[in-house]
Structure formats: structure tokens, C-alpha cells
Image 1 (cartoon, rainbow, N blue to C red):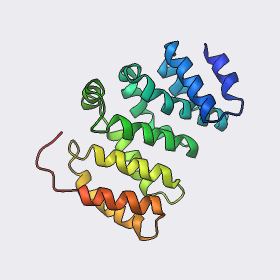
Image 2 (cartoon, rainbow, N blue to C red; image 1 turned 90 degrees about the vertical axis):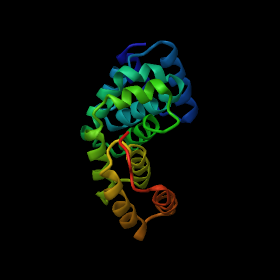
Image 3 (cartoon, rainbow, N blue to C red; image 1 turned 90 degrees about the horizontal axis):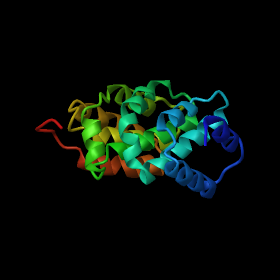
Length: 189
């Protein structure tokens, strides 16, 4: 499948089942992840959203294909302005930095400068216009890299406490869990 064919598919209404089927198809065809990342910035926001949704669903199915594209994905964080895409980018970063991520992913993450994505995650946390799901995934991603960027341990608790003051149940639950696990860091990642 090429970009034109994929854009045609993304232009049609999709549910979770179609997204999973299409992500399986793309993974089997070794579709270029860089091209899919590019489609998340499509001028038609709905196509960008569906491409980001597809990207998020491809990650668990074909993690090895993501490895060479992690630096590109991270470098694009500052450009993600589509609110629907922000959720998927934050969730992908949360998954990439999870302690349960495969060793190959952890190695690539360790050699990638995550600061553009970290900065954007903090921006999303403080922006009142950003969707709750984005904030929850961004907070988790920041928590995941706190050992590597130890200054996050100073900044994240303050942001979580601020969000929890008037936050939704999702923010309350995630915030409490993360705050209970945040401890002073003794060594770098």
C-alpha cells in the first residue's frame, strides 16, 4: 500500500476494528513508519488523527519497526498541534518509555535526546486547553524518564498536584499513583 491508498482509507470513517485491521495490514506490508508519522501532520485534521491512531495501534504489533524512527517521532513532538494527535503521541511516548518496553526499544530510547518530547509533555500538562487523556499520558511518560532526567522529580509533583486540585477522576487517579511512586532519585538512567 502506498501513501495515496492509505490516505484514501484514512479519509473514510473508522472504528477500532478497522484501525486494528489496517494496522495489521500495514505491519505485515512493512509500511514505512516515517511516512505514517508524516501523515499525522496531514492538513486535513481527521486524516492526521486517524494516521496517529493507526500509528499508536501499530506500535504494540510491530515494535521493532519503530526502533529506527524513534528519534524522528521524538523530534516531531513540538509540531503536534492537532489535539486528537496529541493524545496518540503522548500514549506512544508513554509506551516507548515504559519499564516493560523491550530491551531494543530501551536501548534506542537511551541514545535518543528526549528533551523535545519532555518539554512538550510539560507544556501539555500546563495548557488548560489540552485534553485530559493527553495530560494523563504525558504525565506517565514524564514519570517513566525521571531516572534519566532527574530534574523531572522536582517539577512533575508540582504539576500533578496543581492538576489534581480541580482535575477529573482520570487525573486524580493517575496523579495519586504517580505521586506515591515519586521518590528522590539517586542515580541517572
